[in-house]
Image (cartoon, rainbow, N blue to C red; front, side):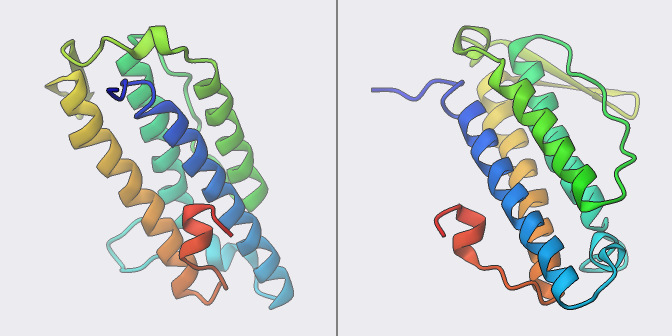
Length: 168
């Protein structure tokens, strides 16, 4: 049995965003327990030239949202990128998950060979749907998801691989 474009994307994004939500909840509790201002964690970064935690979460959400919308050939809802708390990041994740839950298999399946055009910074890049999902959207999504996890872990939040994978 083959794996459909929908199966390879939407349920994966929903699950991993749920894991990210759990990790952010653990981080918020950890900050409270250690009497750390949440802003310290929210603005933490792994290197001076990398985005902070807030932006990593926003980009992970945007990747799942925009990537799925492009594959489904629909418009993605806009995001304001104004989150400043764990609760606001949780709300963003929940909005993205709700959008994804509304995408049917019929909207995405069959997009493997369709040309998808990604427009960024005034430049268009064209992909075939399957290559777009597997070579661009998924690696980018996991990069920002992993970086968010690593920022929190680096700052002493007691999370581990099982939290990342959602098997705790």
